[in-house]
Image (cartoon, rainbow, N blue to C red; front, side, top):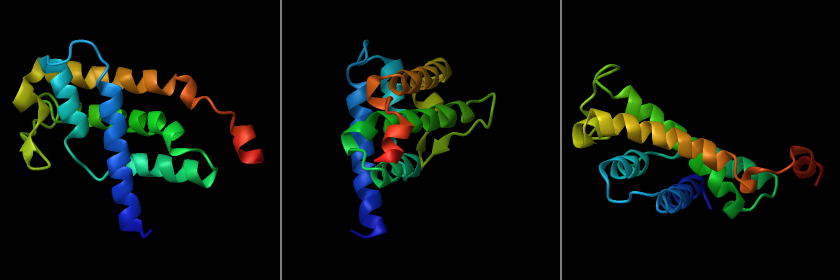
Length: 140
C-alpha cells in the first residue's frame, strides 16, 4: 500500500472512530452536538490521526486500540479550529470552503461545541483503551 492509500485508509478509520465516539453522546439532534459533528467531521487530511496510527502500528498496537487516541487528537484539533474561527479570534466565515461553525450554528453553540470536543478528547484519553504500558510495548 502506498502513502496515499495509507492516508486515505486513515481518513476513513479516523472518521468512523470520530462518528462512533460522538454518536452515544446525550442530546443528539441538538445544535451543540450537530456543531460538534460538523466541526469534527467537516473534512481535512487527518494527518494527526495518521501519525497516531502509524506510530502505534510500528509497535504492533492494533488499529482498534488506536481509535480512541486518534480520535482524541483530532477532537483537540477540531476544537482549536472552531475556537480560532470565532469572531473574537480570526473571525473567519469559511473553513475548507464551507461556513465555519459559528456562522452555521451561532457563536454560543460553536463555543460549546469546541469545549465539548476538548472534553471528549480528555475522556477518550482517559479510557482503559489508551492505557498501555510504554515499557511493555517497547520491550516486545
